[in-house]
Amino acid sequence: MIFEQAELHIKPNLEKDFLTAFNKAKFIIASMKGFINIDLLKCIEKENTYLLLVKWETLNDHEIGFRKSDQYQEWKQLLHHFYEPFPKVYHYESVLK
Picture 1 (cartoon, rainbow, N blue to C red):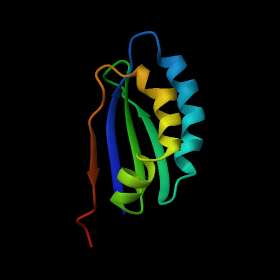
Picture 2: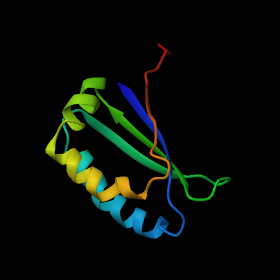
Picture 3: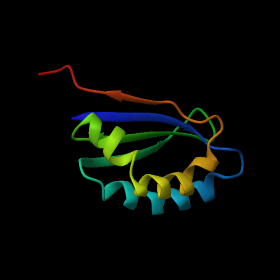
Picture 4: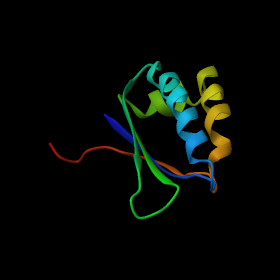
């Protein structure tokens, strides 16, 4: 299992619109092969900041299956214009056995 993590900095005064768009976009990503779970956390200390966490079965499910799909283009159109700066995405795997 792979954990995708991205810190999202939303442009000022756009949080409400971002959350509306995200609630549509979450169904797009949830329909993808290898998708397990998604969560969006609002930062308490930093205004307009969210943490996106997505669980995937494999790295390829995210990097190839989702990112190279037509569905990703819909996701991108819904969400990418809210970010400043554009988020860096990192992938993690558990080291605990």
